[in-house]
Length: 157
Image (cartoon, rainbow, N blue to C red; front, top):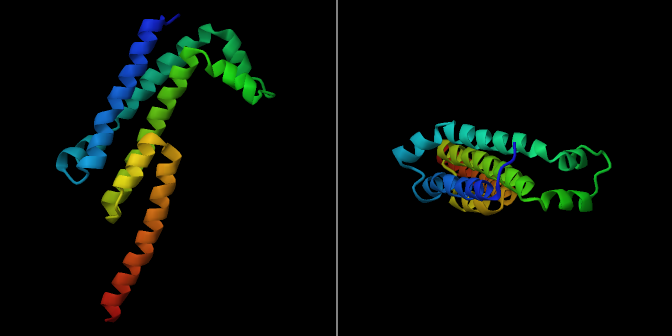
């Protein structure tokens, strides 16, 4: 099945807009019942995974790209050539959107459970997923260290 350029552009843009409300809720109003309810659902991830599946399956019409990705000697230059194709780029982008949002959701729930501040990590995760994760891991470690000292001071004091 071939996906024409207009549909591909529509799916790409739609996926970008689709994730924004979730990020907005987690960053701007994290402690509301609405945010907890929305982020408690796995449906957004099912929708993104469904879109990814569609893009992935329809990319099989490009046998040359599939062969390149399955080559054990794939070079960085070869990968760049494959990702220069809009269909492959859109598929990869939806992959990033789904996994960044999934990690963002995990960071969000970690913050809800522990009380650690997450807005900065979530904002970073939106724009640079692994940096947001790193930020959260660091923030959580600092939070745990200082909050445990505060509890020890209360108990011992």
